[in-house]
Length: 416
Image 1 (cartoon, rainbow, N blue to C red):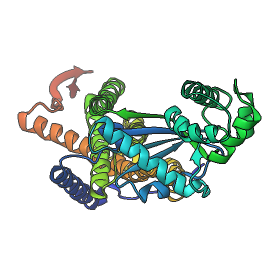
Image 2: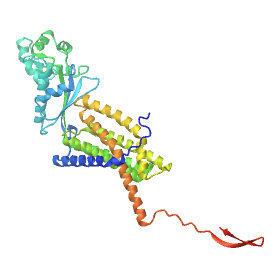
Image 3: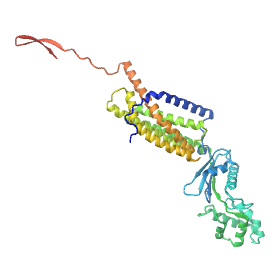
Image 4: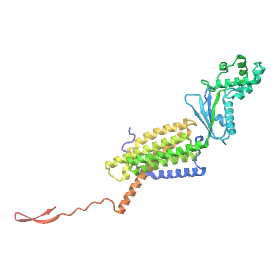
């Protein structure tokens, strides 16, 4: 399908506005990175608290994030687990001690209780309570109800309750207190006391852990290595398939795309996490593929020995691939902008990187990679002319004339 047929736009004649724009964006991004001491890394790279929460009926990620922001400052990430009622909630930590972790956990649970648990007065949430808290709450009411359990028996009972709660299929979430009738040692009198003192909350905290700074540093190093190895492998591939200068031009263009994208993340103060790295790797392949398509058409036109300078051939090749560029880049851009506008906070960084990368990657294939290729070819030709190593045409010898005799008449004939 061709949208444009027989176009003859002078793309390379309009390269300087785009090159100037690239220089300005690159400079602004690098200055921002230098002033801020590098990109703003997400919790994946800096470390923080990671809480696994299971809901009876999972609210939206935005509702969870809004509830937590009321008591917890800074970045909060909410990742929904598809097909389950679970979410992973991540937040930064101002320290690595157990006390800091417990404080953050307490504030997160308190915020979630306020937002998603109905007011139950002074009742204890059996889904978030530990064994000791549950035993302390039930000990006196059980004694007042005449159940006649010793302290050790109360401890054993609460251990049985928490074990029952945490085993599948409940997995930490009691939806109805009548489910506790299956606990060993349970009887109607004890169950009635539990109903008076406890309630089944809307969620349970299944696990809380700390992502340490060392893990974050390792992830940063691995992410940088992955991007560099991808660029190196593409350079080798293009150099093998075309010429080395084609590979260099393509890698410079892709590196240009990556630097501008990361710079815009710094300018807009957006965090860089693992999803953003995934988007950057996607853009590396996308931009490289777009550049290879143009270079492949340049190679085909050179084999066909088209008339005109190398610049004219490159410009013609860009026009010939224009329909393909508009279709692929345009449709991909529509998908990315839809993710950015409607994907919510979780996909914001990923979709922002795609939107920026598609725009920058599309014009870099035309206005960055192609001018580098032309610049190098012109430089080689000028050097060849200057050193006299260009191709020369040997002069044609003039025909020699000598007399020849025929039928008694002297006729001069050229002898070649």
